[in-house]
Length: 137
Image 1 (cartoon, rainbow, N blue to C red):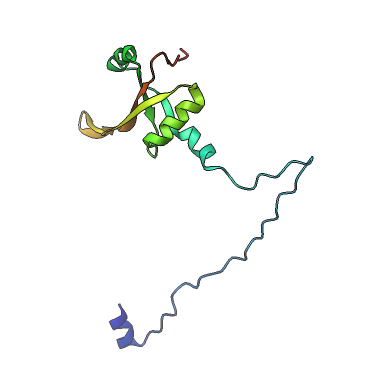
Image 2 (cartoon, helix red, strand yellow):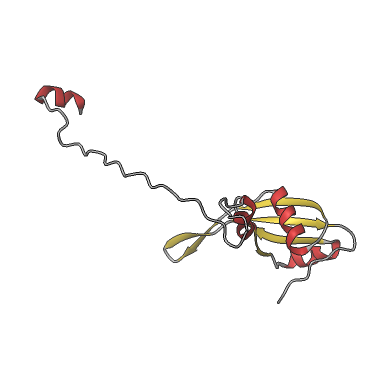
């Protein structure tokens, strides 16, 4: 409404003023017991909890285990390289190939109300001959 402000000669008195917050200084972490302090968070440490969500135990996935292929639900931000590195680190296996599939959300209806079944991302991992992954049940 700048045109009306010019007509009525308003100068913007009603606008809120921005309040600046004082800067907070972070003190460096002191070394204790001769060890180096950890000041930075490693990127891999943040991703490890969000990469492999759970093994996907469908009938087709169980049949694929005979071909040395395992299926996992993975995080939304995961890619093939991150998934392969995570499997090597957690299960000590040699990964030959990783295929990633985005499973879309599906519309579901209960009576008059409509909603969605959540989508997810899954990875099909092919392991080297003689390698296997055992799941805890």
